[in-house]
Image 1 (tube, rainbow, N blue to C red):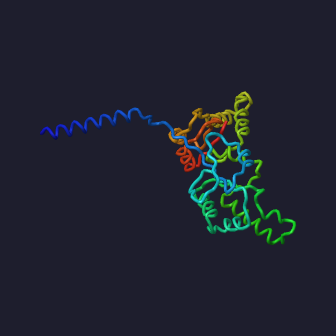
Image 2 (cartoon, rainbow, N blue to C red; image 1 turned 180 degrees about the vertical axis):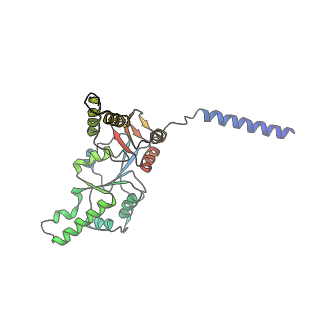
Image 3 (cartoon, rainbow, N blue to C red; image 1 turned 90 degrees about the vertical axis):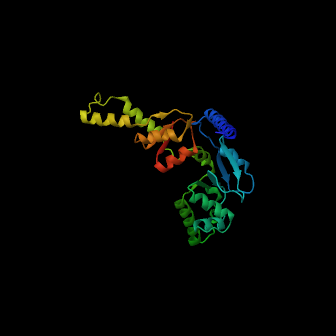
Length: 256
């Protein structure tokens, strides 16, 4: 091997060693926590709406612009006659319709305020059949996945949006657990067969995942245990990859 080849080999070895050294200092399993992007379909700022949303540090609130291509949660404060009709018929007549329809196609959550349904202010004067037509458009949008809520309930929707599947009533779950754990089946006079069945159900209750950040690896471990639901802390954060996995596996999420 000549001198030039030796120098080249030495250089390659030095570069390789340095790259490996730097990779060793990079935390491999550190989760990447991203902010939720909440877009309000309005050209003007709405301070009262922002106050009602009660956003936290993990939320990024934006007002709609034509350049936008994605979001995590879309809030439509007002649905005029044209926008309501176009969306219900799947007509992408403009940038607003295109954005809303695209978010629905992507499976993103879209929420519209009932107070913003403009046709309803004409209820006392509108022809019955015409009014029913617009009621039908609202029903269609609901079937497409748009959720109609009152502004007073919007905060709860935003808080629950951090979960992939809508959370069931936590108090109901805790009540069921308390009822099962209060008295041992045999002490309650149950038959051995019934006692075994109840104890098996008790063992199947999901344990609380106490991690501050719920990663994809964590939910995969639960899935490998044939679990179709998980229980996490009230302040736990689910990473985007974990959310995608939960969605694909149709796993339920409970917060406690």
